[in-house]
Image 1: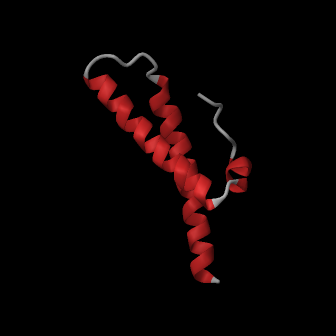
Image 2: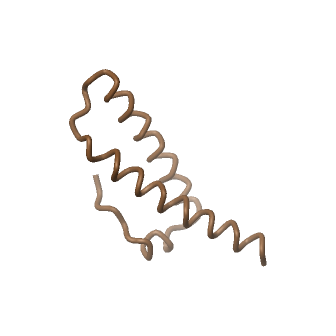
Image 3: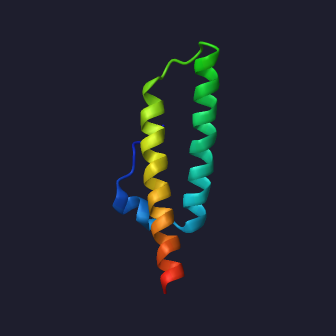
Length: 71
């Protein structure tokens, strides 16, 4: 897949992009867990990468939500 974007790049994404990427990563994590359960998982490192990327996106999304409600 792609290299993990840094936080500055993530902040440039639109809200729709962030939501779309969050949904995609959650789906990927689900698929990875399923593959692991049936012993077909080859890229075990994707768990960590996807979780980090998801956390990054969720953090930026929550920052934006807080700034919208406080202003």
